[in-house]
Length: 73
Image 1: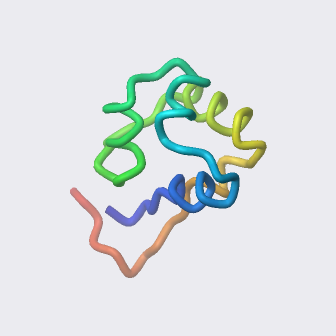
Image 2 (image 1 turned 120 degrees about the horizontal axis):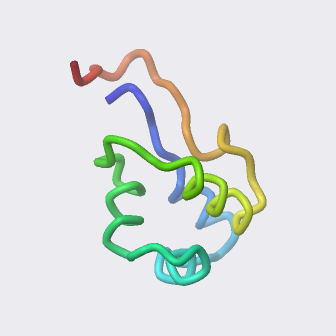
């Protein structure tokens, strides 16, 4: 997919674990892991908002478009 998820970089910069983020935004670790690995097909705006609030970042800090990657059509 041409959308790249940069959640790992944001977590590392804040010295936060995926488990801690999952607890703070009240989402299962499994679902957050799917997002982090780029295997998610969608993300709810409410989830994106919660992640941004906890990590104090913008949606563009978490998601990027890389046209060199193959798209899934």
